[in-house]
Length: 328
Image 1 (spheres, rainbow, N blue to C red):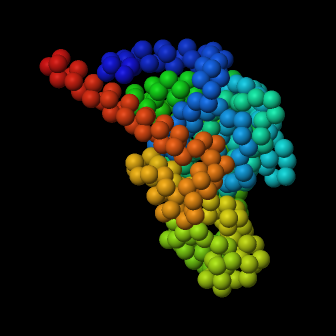
Image 2: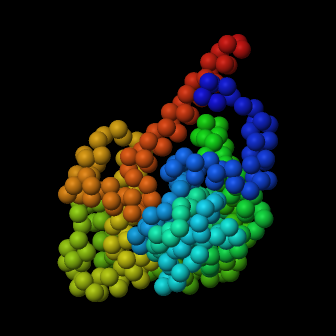
Image 3: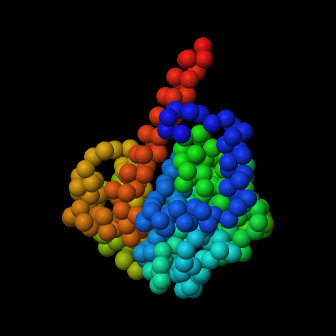
């Protein structure tokens, strides 16, 4: 579709329906043949990634929801709350905000995964919910996948890999379908009744710590220094931070630096060495290792895919406007 031809809404609907009705073996075969493909989309919803991965990911946490599907290849083992969870063809993995998790290295080959990083406020709008806290929306990190959820996940993954979403603006519609089916299937029905009891109190010293972290996110922050600045011992700071925020200070700092990094990589063409220096890394290689261990792809590959999706969208928009002008 790079020639500027714009498929009709019906053509796109037919393509997506056919992709969703079939299992994604063709997508997995295509990915395995390409070596290490990555398809990434970013938007108001957060980030959606289809990628081939073998490497481990260090323990980390997100402010966002993280939802994972296995599309092909080897089963994947994640560590969460001192438990090993196996993501296979029949399961969906759902991590609530600030639920720490790590991925083990694959033992006998790569896996093709669909990973969604969903902004909580976008999810609130999609659900049309007044729930002020979504930290425990999904009670179980591992659930058996339903036919409807599988259908919607397959449609989204195929569309991302084929770049239909980036060029035709269907990504949010497909995500809404998927997220709606996930919440109907797996969300805790008692959450609205219990939300006031589960809302976290925020100590004023922790609010001060959060503000300091955001103001100094591009520095190499140390937990001991932050504890001293807010007037708490290291152990008390760790305890209060985890109680108020739901994750450790280090996971929160890492998430903040990653948020800066992904935003810059998607909007700036500056050299990676400059980004590494601005984020407080002593060497470019340290930044690359940090990013890859958390996201699963290198910063350069992440930028290439994000910029490529933007350029494809702009090219199609230009072609669409030219076609309209000619028709007039």
